Image (cartoon, rainbow over all chains, first blue to last red; front, side, top):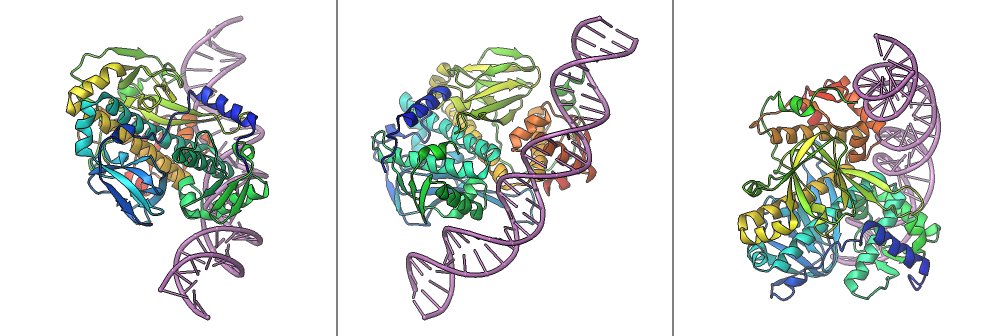
Amino acid sequence: MEPSLDPAAVNRRAAHDGARGAMPTLHVRFTDADAIPFPTRTVERGDALYCAGEPLRSLYTVQSGCFKTVATYPSADDDSAPHTQVTGFHLPNETLGLDGVCTGRHESDAVALEPGVVRIMPVGILEPLCREYAAMQHELLAIMSAEIVRASRLALMLGTMPARERVAAFLLDFSERLDASAASPGEHAAELLLPMTRADIGSYLGLELETVSRMLSKLQRQGAIGLNGRQVRIVDRAILEHS
Amino acid sequence: MEPSLDPAAVNRRAAHDGARGAMPTLHVRFTDADAIPFPTRTVERGDALYCAGEPLRSLYTVQSGCFKTVATYPSADDDSAPHTQVTGFHLPNETLGLDGVCTGRHESDAVALEPGVVRIMPVGILEPLCREYAAMQHELLAIMSAEIVRASRLALMLGTMPARERVAAFLLDFSERLDASAASPGEHAAELLLPMTRADIGSYLGLELETVSRMLSKLQRQGAIGLNGRQVRIVDRAILEHS
DNA sequence: CGGAGCCTTGATTATCGTCAATAGCGGTGG
DNA sequence: CCACCGCTATTGACGATAATCAAGGCTCCG
């Protein structure tokens, strides 16, 4: 299946970006850090990069693999189980740990969904660097701001969209970010391999795992996607976009 | 239109018991900017500080009054109405405009809910300043990080809590931030005057305005709050916390 | 081969959205 | 001054969406 040979789709996309003012480069790549020989770390499936409450030592840029960040909310209520939610999935070139800058402690857990490699950027080094290099400072501020926008978009999605739209939007977003990380210019991968469980997706989207499963099945019946466990093929992007 | 009372005045007076939660200080005060004679601007009810799509010129720190930020999402679907949501309410000492740093354009509208004053900090001045003063840089990063955490908490609330808990959490959060802005140490105001409509609250919480009204009424029947239009008296904090 | 975790699907229930009617408050203008 | 209007809030009835409960199949791995 060739994606985005449909000129209409391309136009729609352009109109989108125009209307919103240049779709922000969320998950901005921290390019200026590329020149600096930061150490790396390899992780296995299930490894935690950091956990909530730990002191913030470093920021991490994903080089390969995929991570989820999980927030735990003390649940105003003490006796019942604390609320917990996946707040993001993170692909290569995206930076993790930014939520910990405000308190000096991580506010969430970061867990590897598959084997991967991250670059470790100690915060103690980062801030002086940013004071020296204006471009680097600007870029750090930009990726933090992008995180704010990303989280706000998630909130908006959770607050306003019905289940099917959420699942469709998730698939589109994930596939686009996968493309971005693959650096294949202007192309849309039609075939995705989701590294997370239905429960993870549901937690992220504010849905139960059964609902996610049902919506995926429904999208398949409608011919929007091909579905085989965690393999998803995007057949008709337009159907997904129109929820 | 409004009760002839001055909301800020009512909110300023009346304070009660202590025991502040272990919540990190979100909405960090940008203290280091206090020393600098930034210009201010007064706004009337309904005035927009900025609108989505406008180029980012400045950040704004609320000095008095209350603002809401409204995000508009192009709604994957073109023909139907775009999704829109209140993404935050902003009280004195909180900073607005941070979401625009990543793209150089504002991602949301900021609208005054009552007459107020803001301090205007041009971004062109702010970045060099932060390069010079480490403490200021650290503080800017901290308030941006706090915004990330705040947005993630909102997402978590929208994704995991039922309506009644959301409304209760909103009341608690608002009252605590009101206390923080009033700088009465360790005290809790029992009497709030909400400057926003039920529709605003609903939009923020991902609920319809009728649901907000119903939940407030229910909390009143349970003896958790006293309710008279936009005046809310917190009677039993424990009930709210255990939602 | 057996077990554990993951996924799908169905039946039932609860929550919340939608539609509608009413009331209050404040401002406006006759 | 009072009547009217617009906006906001409350409440009820009804229906739709998604959660919950339950069962069965699948794959992977020991």
